[in-house]
Length: 358
Ligand code: P6P
Image 1: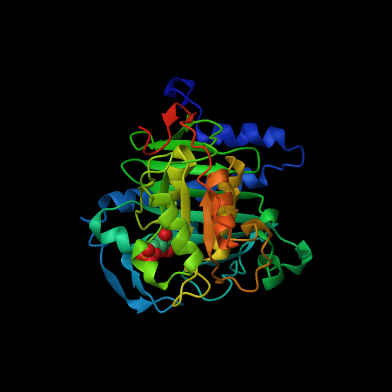
Image 2: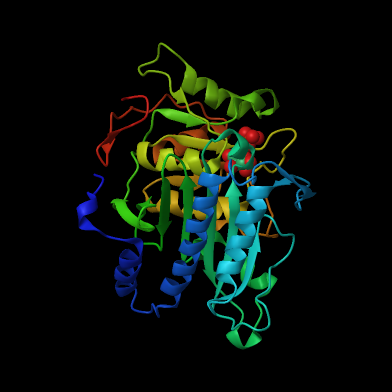
């Protein structure tokens, strides 16, 4: 159930209470999260004012993926780097907007963590006032601290070694969702006081949802097993209503809905995107940690996302993530099986009825 604000649990209070749960916590992680929250508050303010600050539209530059960089992308990227580079917590960073590792400037102390982030997820939605987000992932370095700067070895760790993951969702309000491995909590920014307050405690998603989230425009390029699975969800006349389609085109927004209402999000491989579209290190690993911490499942269609061994910072991978039963069923279809639609639950979770059942 959403908690009421009168508990006044700010995210800073929550992080310090979580720190007590982890005997080894030194407070360094708490201070690093404080810096990340400052960056997110600044980005949130700019998102809200983008239309007035001439910050919409394109820059002249392209990112490493050959995509035109939006002004807000660039602003968000620079804001996170400036907020995070001097606190002494990180030994290096990596961003969707930067080809290589982002070093910590020589004049600043280096720490025991690395940060990966997608500064602004959903860029295609910026100019049309549709929900966008920021995603971040934190690992401990694996090279000895005396080595100073972080290296590729510190980055290329499987996602189940993350010590924290989270996202900001800039929608009708700004939500901050994070986990350090002890459950998922949602905070809502009160811009009048600049505080994030706990509003959804220990989020658990229904074991099965009633909506699916995928770009159906790619249907003709999908593998036959994916086509069969999506057709199966839409089939009328079965024992259950067909699933509803919910697709925003910002992974953070689609996952934010699934975390609370259940369902399945998919960006599979297709004839043009043979590795899928979404990036493993700074999109899917953090989202997968959150989904699993909320009782769901996240795979590439056959293997757990968090066990994939990365080969590059910008590596893409196919993704099926969301309610456990839904993802297991999609995996069965990917194996060529054709299971009947499992018993649908009119589940209620945090007081919300699954999507489509409302
Ligand atoms: P498509 C946004 O650009 C993004 O990286 C994800 O946030 C989103 O889920 C996906 O791409 C949308 O891609 O091909 O459906 O426009």
